Amino acid sequence: DLAIGTQEQWLENYEKYGLEPQTEILGRLVGYFHTDFAELNQVVHMWAYESLEDRRARRKKLFEDPRWLEFLPRVRPLILKQESKMLIPANFSPIR
Image (cartoon, rainbow, N blue to C red; front, side, top):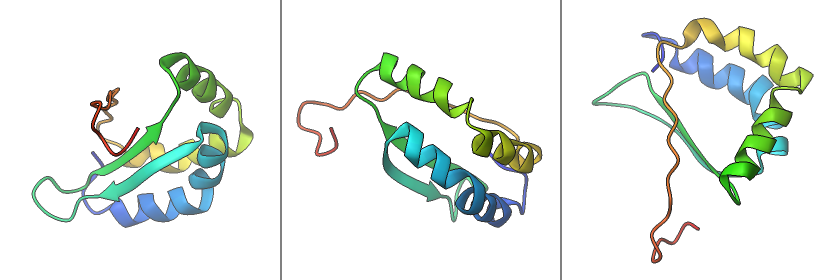
């Protein structure tokens, strides 16, 4: 969740400073979304990994990247709450 009225600021900063290092290092961006009604001020992004260990290794590398470390102080004050989930696709899921 983001502070009220900061969603556009988040998206602008992410596109300018965070998107490139994250996509280069984390790999497959499945989708990046923001809320428009109901629960407002949220950004949701989904990434695909080969395994939990693949995710750990990629995130470790991300947090060593100077571009990512430059991005974080720009957006940290905007974040009220962060939530992470590991989603396992069902056998019939079109996203694998």
